[in-house]
Length: 86
Image (cartoon, rainbow, N blue to C red; front, side, top):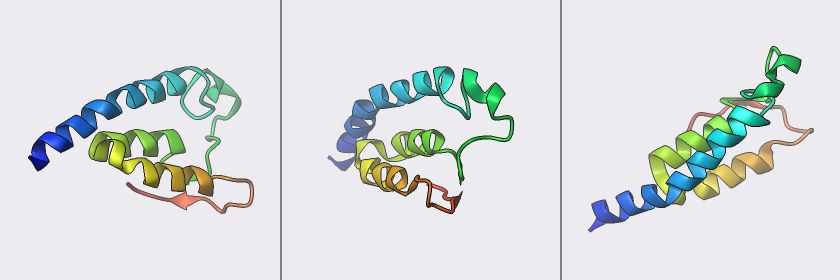
């Protein structure tokens, strides 16, 4: 039963991963067309917030949303940034 819930959880996360990919390929300053203006990257964190969210969604599915929200809340001008692996 747990295996079915996990696969359902990941299937539900698939549209969110697709939305992240669209964001990364279009308007992301780290991954998209705007990266020409930021050759050394824009995000203070490694990996960038969108890559972190994509990895968490692929690994944990929708149950990883609290981790993603916590990371996005930490991404602010007063933050020091750093390495944060999923």
